[in-house]
Image (cartoon, rainbow, N blue to C red; front, side, top):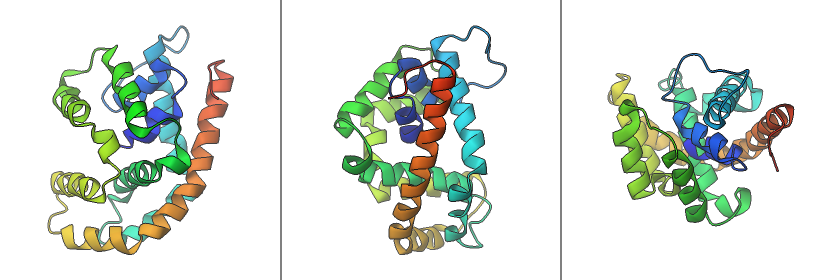
Length: 197
């Protein structure tokens, strides 16, 4: 769900950026012998997902969601990461946020979006949802819908409390795993002889 951060980690290559979004919707085998531009983006997306799930700097943040939200915490943290990133874009990002998100949509538009993602992607692009992640209420509304789909009903109050009570701590945590994930993405790109800086 952290599409903004995924796209930013692949920002030097349109295929990597497109994979930052499409990686959650395209499953199955990828040709890693002669990968296409998008294939490379999907491979990077999967690599980041695997590594982030193992990162102590991310795992140590899960407890902030409390016992009630412990199980969906990894999914919620992905959204928190995008919120912190968008809100503090001037500190972490490059270019203007709206300029960057427009480049994300341009990269994704070069590829066939799977049917199951088309409606969501159209909404994301048309409303510039990636940039609107800076608004905590936008992120909270998305989280509430996800929690309902996962059958974590009646957790809205706990979620709202958690997001506001730990807002500074989520920022501090992000500062740490931002560096970790940036290094992981850059190392992967160097290994695959792709632009990374």
